[in-house]
Image (cartoon, rainbow, N blue to C red; front, side, top):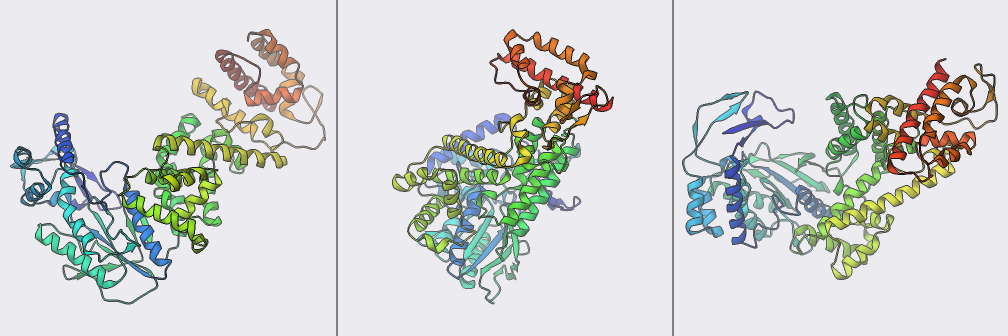
Length: 605
């Protein structure tokens, strides 16, 4: 049975080509196919070709884009020309010929009973389409490998692998020194990299001849041609006697390529996507008025940010303007989910929800991708490229000082920034690098410590933070938000306290006369909590609650504080006095409950 999934991308929903057919396979069948997949894997240790990055451990579409970008930038920096052809396979998984697949399986090494088993699995297949709750008539499947099954990916890689071998052995594509990275492939997304039109045409012809020999096709109208570097007029490149359309920008494995090498459009798109996806998530019900900001922030961070910043791992060094644009969007989202005014100071709103700036988020993604490449097998293209580029930087650093697109130089700069250069030195000397899990912890800790130190330095020299730094001393969600997690009915009160923390207090000594109690005060919040006679009943009630918190020495400690320090402790919902977990939780609850009552009663009476 086949279920149709809409491909998105503003494609017409009335067009059948706008849907992808996914086979609905029984669980027991998937388990069986996975066992067959493991048997096929054991037959060959040199499969698939190193240019193929799909469906493999430690590799992803980012590696295909990384390989393409590094080879392209390498030739551009030498004032060369790079021609990239992005071939579009016409319904690749659905058009695999069964006879051709049988031959490829035999050549792969699947013989005897294993070959007969696979032949049986793809003989006399029939299916029906389930769409809109209705089931079509059953029909025979004469071609293709079932998308959605556990075996389809392996079978397609076996079928297409010889094409990649032919492209690589032709030596017509672009090299990075001795590294052949002329055809990065992500499943059916084939990209061809050449340094002249003649070589590009020969590589396209290899693909054309292979497709004709094995009964599938590429789409000349959907394939794209991009030319990087100095402009050269050359002959058209033909696929099935049709010229491939030359474009200035295209998408490769979900990442934008632009022949102008300008990144501003990419940054603008990231900002728009972040705002749009955040608004979409909030409209779906993930709203700070409904959910706790901590939960809301976690969902948005896991859903919206990866989509908006997809591919940021291989971005080069951003300009100051681009960084500012991204940070402003990041700050807007942060303030919105906490219900804070738009003019709230950035270092306040970020620290109150426990977020670092967006630049550190991007740097973390880059370093994690750097670590994944360092942990790849030595035969992997990405690993070989990175090692070559790192040694290039070590011995010929001056050549790249002004190259904003160089991934390796950017990563080296980031490693030095966060004091992680020792790991780079050890890797280049001995080839040893921490595992992905350990590296993730190292990167996260180093970035947090660096950004925390920077944050503390900024708030210590800014007079607007004189009060705030006494209230919120750590870079983590404000305790009021955690109280609202346990007591959802206090969400409004928690938001009020967090808003109070963000106020820039007046530092002049002019006193104000209280029209309720007749006392002079300089800070209305301190006055309401500590000294206003009008609120004495609420204050007595509050102290009775505090006295119930054991030990009694805690109440004595609070009573010994001056009015300012007492107010700041209540606004922070934290105390350095040693309490057990339940007592701390109760104290935070009382702070949120009574600070709101004090201030609201004082302002509305």
